[in-house]
Length: 355
Image 1 (spheres, one colour):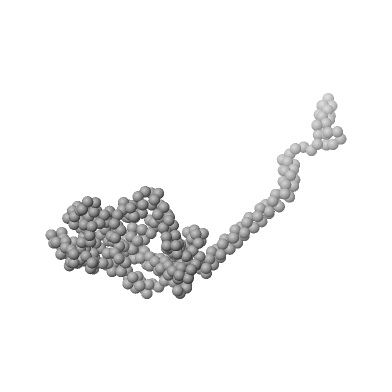
Image 2 (cartoon, rainbow, N blue to C red):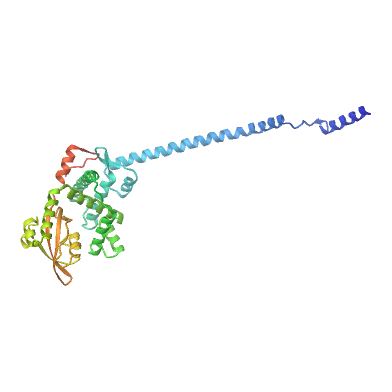
């Protein structure tokens, strides 16, 4: 009986493992792994060529980008250093790529600084003076402006060094105060729109460009004052005499460097709030004083340089004030800068043609 049952089970097992006359293999871990490897090996025929193509595309794209960058850099170098272009496009390029125009010590002077200075000259004379730089006169004038702009940026590099050594800085508040003075005296327009139009029309500047120029100017003033302690001491001495009760006119005769006003007690006449014959700083200081009151020592642009100044409100006539001042001329920075240039020579990366 047991033999018959075993025989019956063997027949059923044979039927399960057979479809028709074909024997179906059993599913095991080994044959599943083998089947998976067969499928993957077939897929690799397509995957590997695709990966290889991607690698080639990456290499090709990178090579093209490097070639474009090198070509663009080469063209830019030729345009800036050989042709010395001043175009708007190349000016924007120098804002992004820090091409140098000179070097002093370990400090590189940016080409962009040079174009910033030069382009304001060009724009002003082309738009406001109708000067053609294609004419012989215009070409000579342009060469002169290029030299001036180059001198300005080199000198300012040395001024910045002096400022850093003496911890001299210009704050945003000081810059904004100068803009306030100019706006209140209607020197740059009474509204924001007019102000921006004036900057754009006269110098092709934005407000930030104007602030940048003001910052450079104020830094030069501060450095000039800091390096001339003899003049600073003379001004303090004169102020001390005024505070002790001395007559303003007598102190002006003794101390003032303004030959045109010192014998007249320092009086420079009636001015209104929009006067253009007196510095905007002087006008602003004057209109803050009460009649008979004099100011503290301030620094102001004077003639071709800078000066320390004590201002007095002599009296008011309508909307005008009779002003007087004591001027203390500050030593020009050129001597100090020339000494620095001898000790720390600079190297130019462009050469300008002679007139």
